[in-house]
Length: 113
Length: 124
Image 1: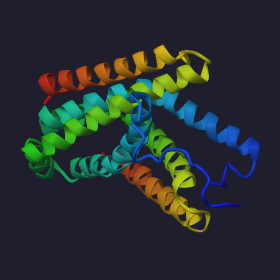
Image 2: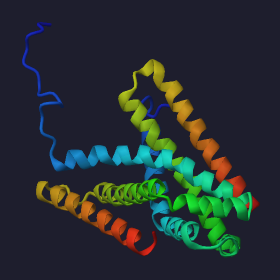
Image 3: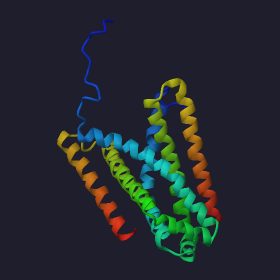
Image 4: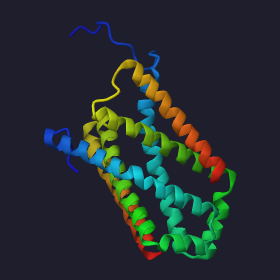
C-alpha cells in the first residue's frame, strides 16, 4: 500500500475503502456474535452443522477478509500519525503482513471445516 | 526563531473533553480488536483440529480470564462499531454541532455498554 499522504487522490481512495469496508462489516458482525455463542455453548456437531451452512461459512469468511482489510488500513493511518517517516514503511509493512497472515489463516481454516 | 514564545497547552495539562477521549478510544479499541483477531483465528484453528481440541478450547473459554477477555473484546467491538457509525454520519455531514457531539458520544457509550451487558447475561 502506498502512502496516501503523498498523493491526494490516493488519500480519497484510502478513505473510501475504509468506509466501504466498515459499511459491509456492520451487518456481518451478526455472524460473529452467533459464532461466539456457538463457541461458548454448542457441542462439536452443532458447531460443525452451523459452520457447514454456506451462508454462515461465507459470511464468516467475508467478515475475516473485510476485517483484516479494514484493520490494515486503520493501522496504516495510526502509523502515519505517530511513527517518524523513516520507520513508517517498515511498520506499515509489518502490519500488512500481520493482517494478511491472519486473513489467509482464517480463510484456509474455514474452508477446511 | 526565538525559543521563548508562548506555546499551546500540552496534552498532559489539558483536560480532554469527552469527545477527545472517545476519539482516541476509537483507535485504541481498533488496535485491541486487531490483536484479538489472533485469538479468533486460533479458535477456528482448534475447531479444524477435531472434537477433542474443540472441547478443550470450550472449557478454556469458560475460565474467568478468558471470560474477561471476551467481554473486553465484545465491548471494544461494540464501541468501535458505534463510533464508526458516527464517523459515517459525519461523512454524511450530520451531527457536527457542539451539543450533539457530546450527546452522541454519551449515546455511543450507553449503547455499547448495554449491548455488552446483554451479551454477558444472555450468551456468556
